[in-house]
Every structure is written in structure tokens, then in C-alpha cells.
Length: 468
Image 1: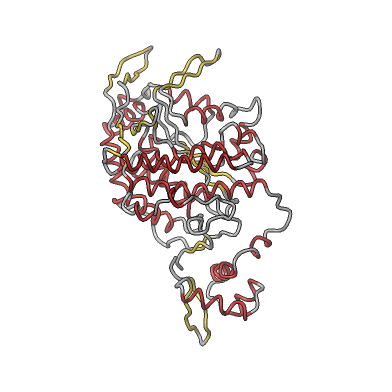
Image 2: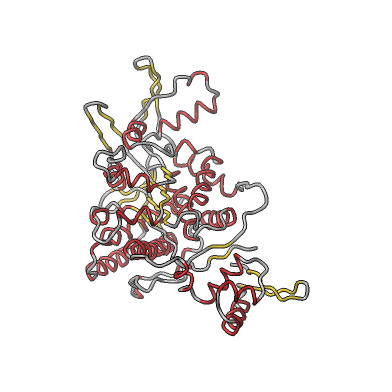
């Protein structure tokens, strides 16, 4: 059975999301060749995580690119800006397969032998800062193979640049909001490092001083609506202090559900996904260094991280400011201030994405095709933001079935066929509670659109899902 998503934010705009005026829109087709690698990644991730909300795949692919960039890709807009992207995959537990999608991203980095760019899955902010400031090689460094020695050298050379995948971010949020919790410092760290400072210094009496040079920390966090809700109510400080504004939040609508079967075969990453990452990482380069003895330990003394400065083409510069000014106007006209920080940061998020595309294809400048695809992605994130906000600020005191019944008739039928495989009209009617005179025309419409096809089996007409 082919995968099918009952509702995709890319083709259904939430009615509460303010529309862009014509002059601020760009057809996504302009960016069709902006990053073929990402398109292939999305197709691969859909295949191997068929129950995930569709926008998760794209976000995870961007996390991979953002992590491999490791602070080495920079563009100037008033000040140097980097390509770190923070993303929360938001959705109900087990329904939208957040972890399955994010694990594909981690596995791809391992397959490309770039897992040293990842921070530990679970770590306190104090330990994370200590690790990112460290230049120590492991005690057994001399006894490692040449390949493992090189891996350790690369790990230390990029110690201050890490991608961080957090599977249960709700636990972090709860601890973060406790005044004396072990995760209390994570909020300030995320906000500060998102702004790409040239250095980050952390000092305590007990731990001494840690200095991170050129810090860089893209994040991919999985979180449920239930975990977010206590801290994301209307007027909560996490909206006002810019914490949530640092994250993209792809969020499935309540009535969204993806159907599909996991392939009955071993998952193997194609070279067309792996090798471009390896080659890009090598092209971005590493700083020179020397290894010295210090207090009985081997430490690595690096030169500054190599930086590739991208230019912004004049077309992109103008398109960015049209988008930027329009979102500022929408922010000004919105009487709800909670989303102000998110709206004002969307244009730079789009530039960060576009810079990743440009660098990945070895372009010296960010061109319009890169921007067009990046703006389209950011617009999907804007839809996800409004969906998230609606869900965490609306009291849900009725059963889940209410949201299923609010689905369009066609979506209910798709859901019924996906769950009750090899269904006839009678089974569909029983499952949805709809009458046959409602189901039949809707089925005919789905068949004409190629979303459902009809076959005869044992003398009975049954319906199966067509291609997405």
C-alpha cells in the first residue's frame, strides 16, 4: 500500500494564517532545482517512516544539512549569520511518528561517518558546554587506528559545533522551567547560541570557566502537544522571551493522519544521499592544528574554523526584504503579541535554509532558486506555527472522535481504507458512520483523482489507496 497523508500543510492553508500579498509570494517551482538532495531525502524518509507527518521529513533533512555545515557557512546581513536551524517536531505520542523520522536523520549521519558532529542524546547544559569547550583527545588516542584517530581529531576540531537531537524534549522543558532544575540553563543557552555569537563563555565557582569558540548548535527536538501545553498557553513567557521563536514547529493538524506500511526489507541508504554529505563536509574543510601535552593529557590546539562567506544576490536581497517587511506588517496588525518573535525571525530562517542550499551545491552566492524553495519551506513552518498555537491554546474537552468527524468526507474515507485494508463500501460506511449515498460520490471523486482505485476480488468490489 502506498503512503498517504490525509491532510498536508503544504496544500491546505489554515484559515487563521494571514495570507501573503501577491508581491511577497514566489512560486515554489522557481526552486525546483535548488536542492535535489533534499527532495531525494524526503522521498527516502517517507518510504522508511510512512506514518510520519509529511513536513517532518523535510525538517529532518534540513537538520542534517544544518549539522554538517557546522558553523562553516556564513552570510552577511548587517552582521555575520550562520545556518543553524532549531526545529521541534510537534505531534501526539505515537500517532505521527516523530522519533522514527528523526532517527533516519541520525542514522544517515552515522552512515556518512559524521556522527561525531552530534551531541549526546541526553546531556545537561553544563556538560554540553564543557564538551563544546573541550580540546582534549581521548586517553587512548595513540593506540587508535589511523581512521579512528582522524575521527577524534575532527571531533575535537569541531567541538564547539554540534547538532543535538532530543527525543523527549518535553522532559527537558519540564526540567528547564524548574528554578533549580538541572536543565535550567538550557533556555538561555539555546537563545544565545541561535544568534551565532563569535564566542560563548560560561563560568561558575565550582566548574571554573568554559570558553566555546564559534559556537553552533542546531537542534532537532521531538515533543508532544501535551508536554508543550503547560508552557505554551496564551501569554506564556516562552512566547514573549523568544524561546519558542528560535524553533521551527512543523505541526500536523488534528485531522491529519498518514497511512502506509514499512518496507519489508533492510533499510540501506543510497550513495546519492551519503556521498554528497561526505564531499560537502570535506569541501568545507577543517582548521590547521597541533597536538601538545598538557598536564599529562594530549590536547589539540586548533586554528580558527574555516569559514565560507556566501554573497546574497540582488534578487534574493530584494525578495528577502519584501517578505521581511510583509511579515513585520502582519506582526504590527496582529493584536496577539505571542507570535511576534516567531514572525520576525521567519525571514532569517529562510535565508539560513537558502544558504545551506547554495553552499551544498558549491555556489558562491545565494540565488533566487535557493530563496524560492527556502521561503516555501518557511511558509509551511508558518502554517505549522499557527496550528501549534491553536492546539495549545484551545481547550480540548471532547473525545478524539470529534476531530475525526470534523475531517472532510474524503479524508474520513481515506482513513477508513487505510485502517480497514481491502474495504468495500459496506465496511467504509460502518467504519465512518457515513451513509452509502454520501460515501459513493466521494469515493468516485477520489478514484477520478487517482487517490483510490477499485479492484474486484472474490466477486466483491474493494477499494485501495492509490499513490500520493
